[in-house]
Length: 437
Image 1: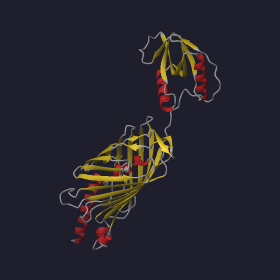
Image 2: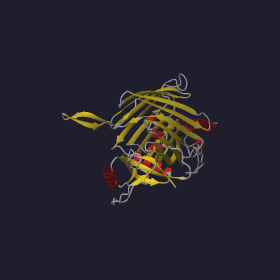
Image 3: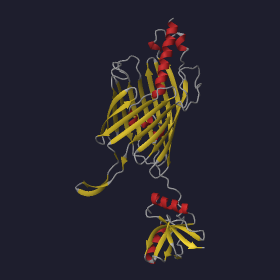
Image 4: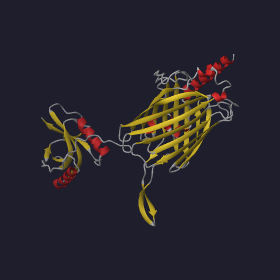
């Protein structure tokens, strides 16, 4: 009878834990400070960070969940990649789940200001029973039910980071089906990536530093201010679970200054929570409290979560790779100038001409009324390793310095856009030269 009772108790505990875990993965309130807790693509951080998170859930309830997590993230300076590591201990009742994972994140520069990150984590997870809390530790019903073995764990994440401040993340938190019992190590390899998903949308705007006037040692000088965070941030999360109990969360954070914030969050089926925190040059501390009425009135004395972080080293820079420019040259050898006299010059938006006319497309940098100025500017561009040349437009009697001549409109448009985005030639534009065949 006792053995049946123990088996029933363990089965109920593990079933409830699996349902909760499938829904919450487990739960964190500090994801707005350390988004790596949910998404491995967030491992490529602007500084090196160490975070220690502790969550004490449902205070006053015996055997209630307690979660402790230690994480580290950093980006390799002037690269596209970052790494992360996370170890956590999740205790509930007599059952403890411990997992260790390592992450790799890689960023793909879609435009000059928008980036797509990919992240993959892999590691091991183990489950164990605290036999000191069982009246008969030698009972085979316990030892046979849950072996202290290791099973694989992995998750995958995407993150689209936009200069506008809006970010979109998608995480597959359990690539392998969770296993709570077994007889051998790494025996569970059931690949179930779509059974659970975490979808995130958040707004966090960083403003670029500005050049301002300031006094230093009694003298006025111009200095550049640091990055600042916009006053309002918000986060939306949807957690999908194939087993049921999918969940929606929302969080709003008000930055009263660059070092102090207040906020609130709402979790479906649980209710509201309050958040606060401080941030200095090296230290980050956040705290959240879930009301005592969750998930129902009188159930517990509430839930506490504290997160302490260290910001280490200097700020990392994400490497922005400029495309291969067609208008550059490998040497600065002096080129012979041939002024071209054209009869018609049109903008690229002009309507297509009949087939009897021939078109050439020029990426023009600057126009001059005299040849001397155009020739000097051409030589300057050549010194900067651009394939510069000049043509003369008889209609307005101006000399145009250009760096690319092509018969393909798409090549010219791409080159002008790349020159504006990745070089100092911000005035680059495309002109179409139409001549009779």
